[in-house]
Length: 508
Image (cartoon, rainbow, N blue to C red; front, side):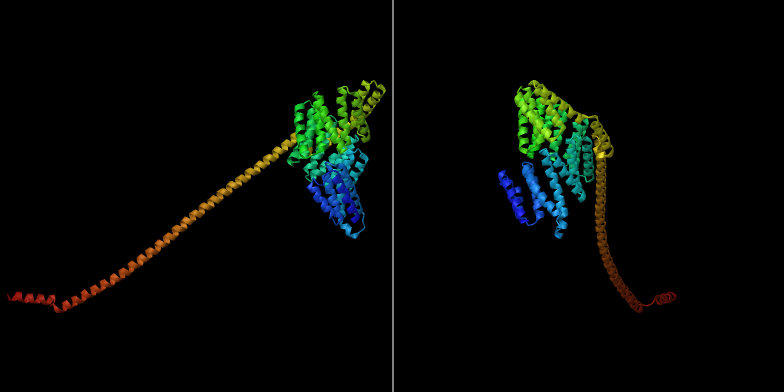
């Protein structure tokens, strides 16, 4: 294990130094240091995977080297009979499936479709074993893209459809957007621009909801291609400009190259040939740097068309022949057909009529593969199957209606919450008034009790004063009565006086 760590570390270190990335990227430097000090193979696999994902955007070949070595390490641990490793097999399988999916896209860019297909199949199988639905959706999308590259519309739509259903189940809006975009591309390729625009627009809506700027850049780019083909050049350029700015902000070289190619295509249709040619060459330089073989054949073909219109037949022939050669190596029917078409015109202008006729036959053969009635019917059949089975992929009008319903429900909930808030306010206000009133009543009660106490004291005082007065009055009356008795005892009685007066009167 230590030998592998040292070998992998020096390999990665060499790649960093050769690309001058080690001193520029703090994240890479940190991960590289962690990898150097890693003591377990789980850490090596995890860190290698992360480093590959960071390198991939600018240095896909370097990323592929790291991933391939890490894939071998993960495979070794999965089949290991070491009892201590059994519990870690799920970890290694998950990392392996992820790396297989990542590497497959690089092989696709190099035109190695068979290896790409095999890696994606392996990734899908492992993700199924782990019940990793996110990984399954990614693998299915990749396989659908391969089938589409082979011109197998039926299987391509089937895989995109399955991927969308899984992403919808796990509420993965980004995954849903990828599938919608791919399905839109299928309809675009079949010439159904309106249907393609609907799927692209649905994809854009999802990307904006989750603020996926790289996804937004891709979506607006695709919408721009539809507007361009509808003759709405200024509108298309606005979408392309937005896509280019987003791609540049994320240093997405694939996105930059694609958008430059599309901007050049609009300029070509506006007869701004020099501006178009400049953008095509800029796109080609980036494609060659990334070794994006599919992108190279497209850029070469565009350049050949401009040079042909400018009468530069020799230069046009070189670019067109390289476009055809790479197209045939990749096996993409559309690329082969388009390259054969421009070569047919070039050879005719050069009076190479035999070669021109061969290109004419090759073009027709590829067109039969692309636009056969069988594939067109398969597309239409899948269109209705998809619309019937998945509400989430219905046309934009129904989606808008669903959104209106959700908005109405949200408004009703907000109104109910506001009503409950108002009710709580009224209740709390009432309780406050009750408390204030209760306080007032309690205060009055205390005051009344206080006054009652004072009155009781005053009454008691008056009662005491009355008692004292009553006692004094009694004493006075007793004194009067006593004096009266003394007086009565000293004075003669009335009868006695009356008798005396009576006797005196009789004598007279």
